[in-house]
Length: 314
Image (tube, rainbow, N blue to C red; front, side):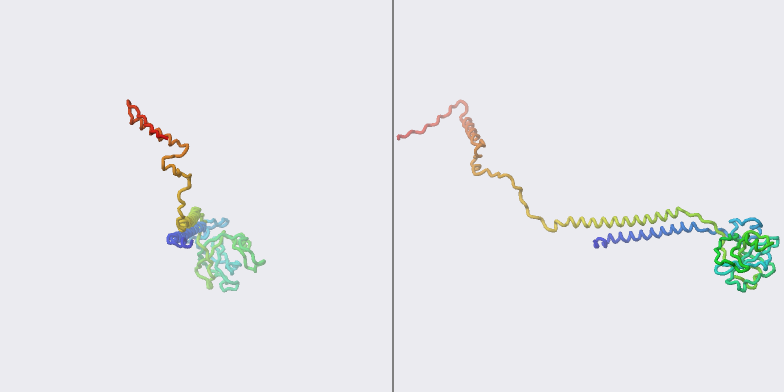
């Protein structure tokens, strides 16, 4: 069996089967990756920054097409109302309202600090500033799992317009909040900017690629089946050849001769024309002799009377 499995022809079948299995497996994995990638959020065109007042308004919810858009906001920070947003990436966010000068304000996340004693926690400057960043929708109050039962004064867990209205009394807030990327003029001690991804849209799964992946894997299994089929035929053919060669290896047997039959020896009487009693051979010879005598005499001739033997005296 090993000689068949490692013969040149069968080794080629082994290599073809392994190659087909590897290729089909990789192509199927590639199609599966395309299918998974299609379900992930897709990046959209990131437009140039616009004024925050063009995308938000008091009493109006921030729509999905405006989320993560780049905006600019000009105004002054109210340093007396700055808050710390707890449990954000192992640190805190600096949150302060930015008065836009039209009677409305928008919450601004100025940056991230590790602890409440960080130098960047100092109150923002009171002058007019221009902040550029990305819009984010208000967070739900239950979106952050509370790990502490009671927060220190001046800290909150979420950036929610509905909650901040009760904290910043007398402030007319726009929906959502602004995550600052740059500020002009820059603060004396800047906090680390909070990263916000660009706008995305929900992806749609392409089931066609999943079908392609399954198809490639089926091809790989078919290649394995064909390999097994050919190897099995090769082994069976070798077995048949070995069985057919087994009788010739011992040599031909003795000649049994003709089959025995009835005894055809007519006996000694056959040599003399005697077929034995009961055969009628003697009558046949006599009839032939008589016919010959008549032919010799011919018509009109009298048959000769045979001479009687002479009598002798007693």
